[in-house]
Length: 319
Image (cartoon, rainbow, N blue to C red; front, side):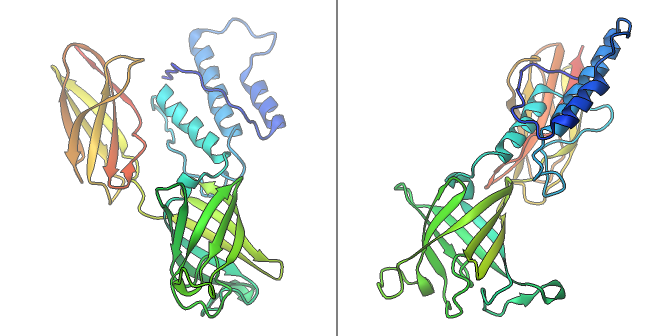
């Protein structure tokens, strides 16, 4: 069953020839007789799924692609879930903003030259070197941004004398990160400050980005993964009714949640609201509904870093 209540336009198709092929596969030929409702529904589902796949940016396919939902046979696909997938695709093509860079990142630095000379580990076949570091990007609250980095300084790892915590200021414009560098963790000493540099950014996913920096003779690449994330989305939500009581159960997919929110809406086009909050590691809940009718449920996991994407939606009919 597919329930779509809101329109969400796909703005970008990355392979027009595949798009045409998909439409040919799902459209009836001129000689096809009138289709029954089931046939129309099947073809509508194929159109929707083909459109989703063909709208994926190529940098997500085969990469760190982690969509908010995947579907199995028998799943109910709701407008909310479809829009969450479309938003994921849309965000993958947007410029990286300062707010998206805030937080703690675990970075791997790669180079072939003498950069990152602080005991770099030799990579596969000795064709590159790499070194790990932790980068913290901060909003200073006055319209400016700053960073700190463990050794080696993510933005100054080519300095083999950099033997202290790195720090500096930064701003992002059109996927270019402009920043300055204060050597040895000293700020305010004119003899060790004054270097301004930039890094080219590329989004891989909402929790990973790549950087390219340095000179042609000593280019350094960084692969950064965000730390301290919200929990993973709960899975396999089920619901059953006995009288006015609805029993729900789900699978806990995370190890860092502090609680779960049980969400319910009372009409097909209504909004979800929290009807229960259960503690970490709990995987069930009960809800008493106000009257007979149809109800829709989802569950999300929360912690200090935020709230997960809600689970797949289930519908329960109370008689």
